[in-house]
Image (cartoon, rainbow, N blue to C red; front, side, top):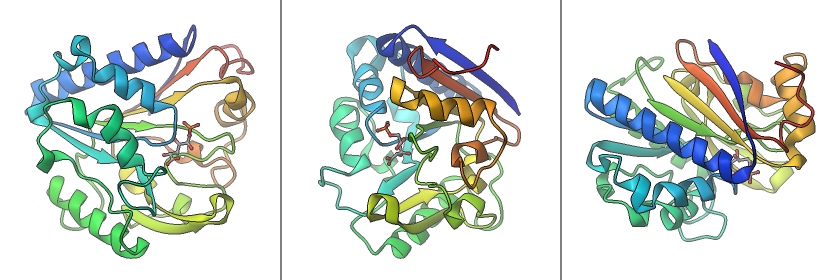
Length: 248
Ligand code: 6PG
């Protein structure tokens, strides 16, 4: 696994770097195999990145007709709920670009969580033409964030999902946030060609140091479980988030 850590001067520069990486990954995948399949992260950090991708300057540099959008995780809420990752992506990006609706694959957070997880695994298996077993070629790009407790997607400390070895998508009740979450597992995340973490802000500095510089303990720091088998792993962070990182 090739891992790099790139530090941007500030949050604005971080979003520009993230958008440039997204556009480059899209163009490379479409050039190489005619389509681009990306998994979007949720939470608050990517909203500004999505809004940047929706600007004429950047939206005009992607062939959206050849793109498929998936989600790394979802909260067990309806698609119009304030907490919905799909709603955030729709408002910040999907409503503003010519991406065919049939190529937006959202997690049905309104359904019973186990049902939503199983259905989403079927959706991904169809998309990747892998009816059974581990993923072969899968996501061209997976966007991820990191919580100040070291979680990523909805892989939270101490949850079984962190160690899942078979299923591509699982649902778990997360006491820490008081709700059910549906999340992609390491099985499919680590099959990606390119994983891009976007981390911003001083409140993430201590955890980022532990995740990148500390001992590998994924049950405590789930973001550490993300290690693409054949792909690239990039951490794009801003100066505030990088404040405690060891010299590289
Ligand atoms: C979610 C995300 C989650 C997020 C981190 C960071 O559904 O909440 O997928 O993994 O990336 O919690 O969230 P912030 O960007 O809001 O700090």
